[in-house]
Amino acid sequence: MEKGVRTLELDFSVWGCVPPMYTFPHYLLKHLCDDHIPIQGPCACIGLKSLKVLNFNCVNVAGEVLEYFLSNCTVLEQLLVCESPSLIDLRVVGSSVALKYLLVQDCSNIKSIEIYDAKLISFIYKGEPESI
Image (cartoon, rainbow, N blue to C red; front, side):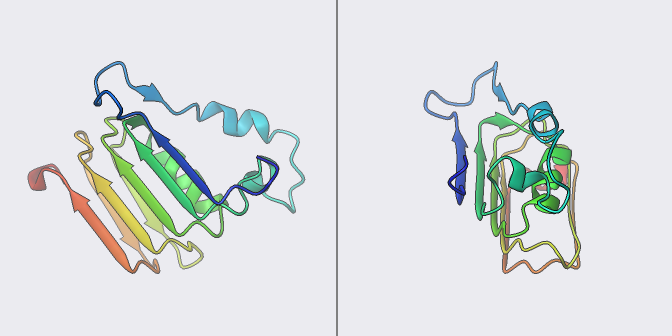
């Protein structure tokens, strides 16, 4: 990832989203960045400082992990999360977040999405209206 990844897409929907689903290894983010230079930031140490697009499809990913990317990948503009049962709460907060496009689709356990002081151009939620 030293080349400066701009798009990271994890799509495990080839055979449908059937259990057991792939779980994003969030613990690796901290492990990979234990010795990072503070000026570079955590996403820079793993080659994600240029990340603009992040897609999770049929991947278990928690809100805390998504918030980590939003906080540390300063040029992240597009986030798509589809069919992630681990996503319960998501916060997109702060004017420093560069996110412009957010799609949350068919995340069966989602309870809340908080968007505050963000620069979003487009927010799409597709799922059960009573769950959020």
